[in-house]
Image (tube, rainbow, N blue to C red; front, top):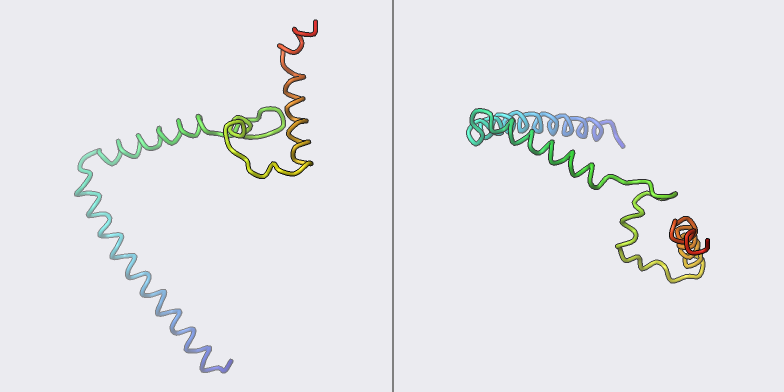
Length: 112
């Protein structure tokens, strides 16, 4: 590339950054006006606090839980997994089922 081409590219990128900064300054002012108009007093504070509490509760409910050697094992019991059509994956699933059956107290009581 020639020196002139590089200079034009640098000038265009600089103008793009200046344009983005000016647009952002205008948008930030408009967003502040919108928030002060739509959420008077402490409504925004209450709304954000409620969203934080809701987010925390949903994290507690849906956080991955270790069951055995696998995360999200409780979700795998109820989802359809179409990739289990080859022999090796069937062996792995049978091995997992046998581990679960061998570790249950019902199995220990039945053979006592």
